[in-house]
Length: 199
Length: 199
Image (cartoon, rainbow over all chains, first blue to last red; front, side):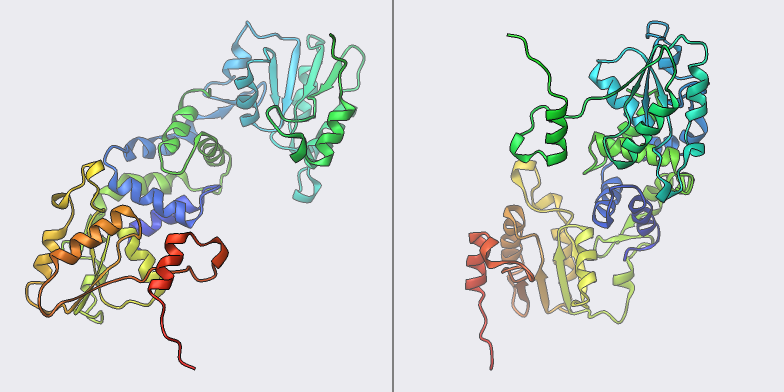
């Protein structure tokens, strides 16, 4: 529809997740017409990012060195590991400031339909990290969906060893949510996990 | 939240229109982990686009040469000019395949609140294009909102000259829309612009 490079730019942006043709066009025109937007900076970052970013050799989180800043931090508890599917889940949990232990990024969830079996995820590395018995608790924080639950079940069996506590994040009503709009599975989980309140 | 370059990339994407922090994070991780996505190509396009793209010296549309492909096309009617706010409006009208004349891109709409007055838009260039009386009709296709309507009113007065027909795109119910959900202004316009139907 457009001439040469403008259309190419629109097409490239359209390949990114969550960006449709209209958004891609809007972004391309923004870049063309907004002088304050630093195209050179974005171009440099894109050219460098894959080379500079590696994955932490211990936990699999994104890192710019051999290990990530969390694994290098001596103030973090070395006795608890929180297992997540993706590196972005680490960021989500870090934002809560509730957890001060270590992480283990699996690199996805078990999904035979998509050809993701146990060999495709970082299970072996997790088991190796537990070998010296420093870790006393593993918190499973995979997503509360079909593949995440399957992965959690697999992990529960894999990690069944004496002296290791394996926990799963609580399911229930989202804070600020409305009981009326909760789906029945979530509401069912909220009943299952109900807690005694003290007066 | 992330280390160095990953966070920088998220921040840069977050500066683009319509991309919030969550989408920016999703895009950055997609770029990091999807080997099939060609980061180098997007980087090259970003680095080149501003240098290679210029604006047509006749109509103001995006172009890679001094004039755009529409102004260069001898098969397009040279007697009708459609006036639009932005270059992306040209693309929207071209997709309809209804219009085979020329365009004139104003570069925005009159908006005193945002400091956009007649001197900031390409009105003088439009008047110059009408000087040799080749053009017999100007179609005003500014947006049907406050600033677009103000610009249309201004244009109507500016172009009031003998032998020149000035028209405005029809307002009315969107095709495929529901009468029930139309706002009252649109519905009022649809009544105003009603047409006789032949049996």
